Amino acid sequence: MSAIRIGNLHKSYGATPVLRGVDLEVAAGEVVCVIGPSGSGKSTLLACLNGLEPFESGEVVVDGQHIGWGPERGGARQRVPERAMTLARRRIGIVFQAFNLFPHMTALGNVMEAPVQVLRRPRAAVEAEARALLARVGLAHKADAYPADLSGGQQQRVAIARALAMQPAVMLFDEVTSALDPELVGEVLAVMRKLAEEGMTMLVVTHEMGFARDVADRVVFMDAGLVVEQGPPAAVLGNPREPRTRSFLGRVL
Ligand code: ADP
Ligand code: MG
Image (cartoon, rainbow, N blue to C red; front, side, top):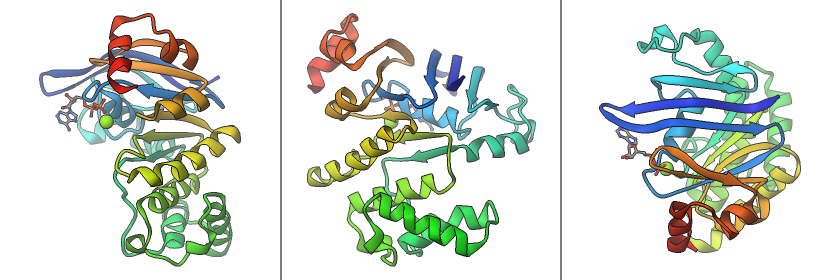
């Protein structure tokens, strides 16, 4: 079964089409990197997957749950009940480019927040898991630090631990290293690489071609709201078929 299945997804902002019939499947345990020029619709694709944005048509299924836009939310094109959407979204972890930790909570507090507040799980068990997650991202010693006292790389690693705390079926990453000072990029990519090796299903929007080449099972090139080309990293990055892929890679590599 696919962990993610996107079929003929169309989405516009106002009159501007942004996704123009995207098809994409991600198998359980697969790591797929999405590359493409700015404005090609990569972030919008992740937002549709996570139920953050409504879409006009198409099918989006994550971990067996249909993602849509329930009637309560005004855009009843995809009639998925609000309750089902809430459950589906819990199965999806997402980390964004901007550090968006809760500033008034420690690293540990950030990681514990959703399991305690959303899942209503007992604090003691959640705390033990949260400490283990912080250790997993190399930050056991920063449990009591506030975001303002952490580097950007450390904040992104806390954000990854926080997403993992909900035990997601899939993890989405949207250019999580783009806002980091260059010397901090490696530590975040190392955490993502380890997660990939442990078998997490990951859809990673990235400009880090080295990461895509070494870690991805598949690379997807998007342009102008469409998947233009996809395949093994060596093929797409090393010997692209499509002129648009070649031209993009010529600019970034
Ligand atoms: P990418 O992540 O590949 O850079 P985006 O998905 O962010 O691309 O954006 C795709 C297109 O949609 C761009 O033309 C962008 O200007 C437009 N867009 C993105 N978000 C919004 C929004 N909230 N309202 C209107 N237009 C948007
Ligand atoms: Mg983007």
